[in-house]
Amino acid sequence: MEKQAKCEEKKIGVIETWSRKHRLLFHGATRHPLILSIRDGSINIASFKSWLAQDYLFVRAFVPFVASVLIKAWKESDENGDMEVILGGVASLEDELSWFKREASKWGISLSEVVPQQANKKYCGLLESLMSPEVEYTVAITAFWVIEAVYQESFAHCIGEDSKTPQELKETCERWGNEAFAKYCQSLQNIANRRLQKASDEELKKAEVMFLKVLEYEVDFWNMSKGNV
Ligand SMILES: Cc1ncc(CNC=O)c(N)n1
Image 1 (spheres, helix red, strand yellow):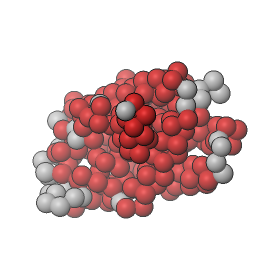
Image 2 (cartoon, rainbow, N blue to C red):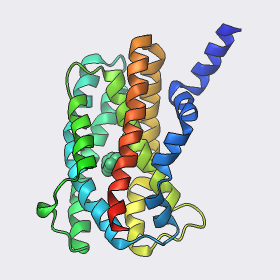
Image 3 (tube, helix red, strand yellow):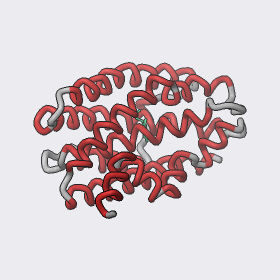
Image 4 (cartoon, helix red, strand yellow):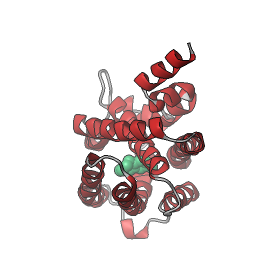
């Protein structure tokens, strides 16, 4: 019986098990009021602009984090394919930074003057702590997957059926809500699941704590734009 339960768990994967176990928090991060207001068209543009400016700073800190996961994959991975997936992630961030600059200029935001808010600083600090060589590949790749998955699930919701997303925000939603990004997130999830399946109990625990922490920080990140509602 116990063996069978374990097999079941393997079949659906650790990530799905955690997403179900912590579905309230997962939902809080992927169906935040800011996202719902984009989807129903009631979004305050000042909130959007504030999010855009803060997210640009976040993505700048995200680049070295992803590079650090690449280093861990090279050193610790048991599978050759991991590096290509992560390298693809690094490469697409160059385009993403250019997109932020174009988008900011469209909205009249001067990126050089943006001051990071507290929640952003805290989140970038978490990314920096994950870059340490002491942090295991399994923990880092789990964090990486959650970070990407929150944006994928959130923005895909804004371009789904019956969404009333304003035309000028559609490109933003497409950036993370598109099919190719969903596939990339699935590849990251597969890597994370494979690693978690083989992980020690201690490593599993650390990865689950990190999973929760990222979700919490994502909620705090969305909350930053509340001041502008
Ligand atoms: C706060 C936050 N979380 C996740 C992402 C998505 N990853 C890269 O773009 C993001 N841009 N910002």
